[in-house]
Picture 1 (cartoon, rainbow, N blue to C red):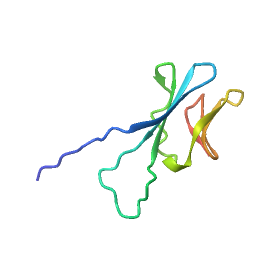
Picture 2 (cartoon, helix red, strand yellow; picture 1 turned 60 degrees about the vertical axis):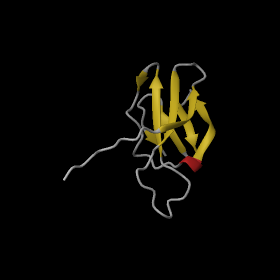
Picture 3 (cartoon, rainbow, N blue to C red; picture 1 turned 120 degrees about the vertical axis):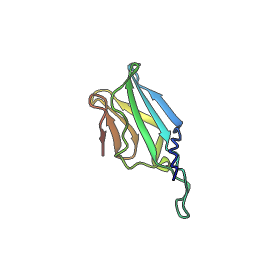
Picture 4 (cartoon, rainbow, N blue to C red; picture 1 turned 60 degrees about the horizontal axis):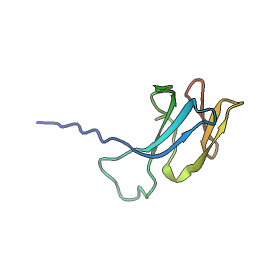
Length: 100
């Protein structure tokens, strides 16, 4: 039997730069190979945080966030070193970890 692995690149749906210009948040929609009935219109998202050209963390795959939960205007809290991208969801700018 022949098995083929296909990797579908996520589609960027939102990008935001911090007020100081040092950080960039990129949110992409994860693609599914197969959509099942009942999946609805909301897709899982991939959260990436960059400082300059360096990705702080691979991505926040362990953060259960869907596209319908996203804020269209992420809120940068530079005092707390966080960016809030959805209700009760943020990324720590130092560690790159998702926080709920």
